[in-house]
Amino acid sequence: MKQKGKGIGCMWYPIGFTVAANPSAATVKVNEDGTATLLTGTVETGQGSLTVLGQIAAEELGISTDDVHVVSADTDTTPMDTGAIASRTTYVTGNAIKLAAEKAKEILFEVAAPMLNVKPSQLEAVDRKVQVKGFPQRNLPISEVALQAQFVQGRPPIGSASFNPPTVDMDPETGQGKPFSTYVYATQIAEVEVDDETGQVDVLYMSAAHDCGTAINPMLVEGQIQGGISMGVGFALQEEMLFDEKGVQINPNLTNYIMPTSLDMPEIDVDIVENFDPTGPFGAKGVGEPTAVPTAAAICNAIFDAVGVRVTSLPATAEKVLKLIKEKRANENKQLAPAE
Amino acid sequence: MDVKLTINGEEKSASVPPETTLLRLLREEFNLTGAKIGCDVGDCGACTVIVDGIATNSCLMLAGQVQGRSIETIEGLANMDDYHPLQKNFEDLGSLQCGFCGPGIILSAKQLLDDNPDPNKEEIQDALAGNLCRCTGYTKIVEAVADAAREMRGNREAA
Image 1 (cartoon, each protein chain N blue to C red):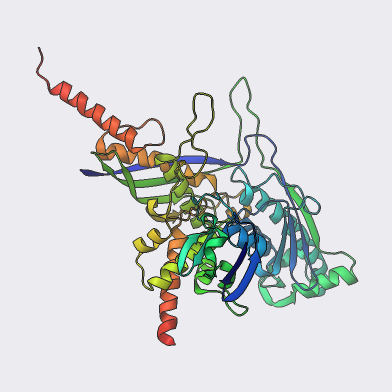
Image 2 (tube, helix red, strand yellow):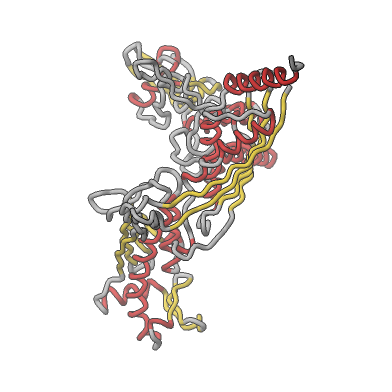
């Protein structure tokens, strides 16, 4: 008979390396047509980080994301970046880019201030314009300011900066330290159906609530969470590297290393829990790896809720779950037997 | 061995060794590199192309088997003016991440929509079951196929 159950998995996850340096550097230059060029060493692997990083530069400079030309991942030309790892790109690289864009913007403001008869601190960059705070009608197009900066003042508006998350190494005597600069949190709930005659587990539904700081691009955050859940479902139920006694992998291909297909995916509800982190770029933290962390735990808890067995090693294959169900029944029968 | 076939509506021919797969033929003779060499043994679906209306793993088909047949590849979907509705909806929803599975997934979806203009979610999931994706969890892919189907039905009614 198919038994339904629900389970919860919660997690926290750190952004960036544990104490070790993991800097990002960036250069932002504002061009005389009002567009900007962003140089970053980080790699786009499909998660959309270059879109998010372009959005961060654009937001800081008051221009459109379409105006930002992102040049990335070329050791000949781009500044150093630790890489698209440790769920760190939005937070660490994003902070470096925001700082670099701020420096370019400072030059624009210093050049624009005398043109608008105000102090640089009274200016803001909005809608492709440099304007006086509180008096938006007093403005100059960013293109005009950049042109003036470059060819009249001789100060090209360009900024370079780096960011390394501040951490504190562990004190060996007290055991105290600050291993990471920031953390993200998430809860996922799984609804499963377990066939108690075969041990087969189907994940019907997953609800995923994730804190990622400010979601700079909610569509991409959703994509990360849905992808992470598919990896979590594989981790929970299917994926296992099998080795023979000599240590040779016996399933080194996708015929028998089983991973989720479109048919294995549950219905997913994504809930982005927005939470401004003052240390992140525009309050953002990260979302990548954490998405796969609580899934297997939630599924195993749901299996327990459905059929009352605790799976303590992954994946929870049908064979393993059925064996546990049989052991449980045998134990129950033993207890029911009359005392001698 | 001489092979003559139609690719994206154009007649093509090539002379290749008999062990050449359709996938290698497309990529190496005709420079159509949209179909990807993933597992090369028919597990992953990254090499999917449409052969006479059927989405097929081109790594499992020999060039000799496509003699005189008609092949559709991802390169034939968009024209200079517009994307195919599937491509447009995949882009709008951010359905692909690394994109390696994309050409195969879009062609599997195209065969589905050619045969069944109004598929339900289960039918879409079933049609894509032979295409593995490690990044996306398939969620936005299935949504984009449903959106594209809706758009194509609308276009047909308007025409």
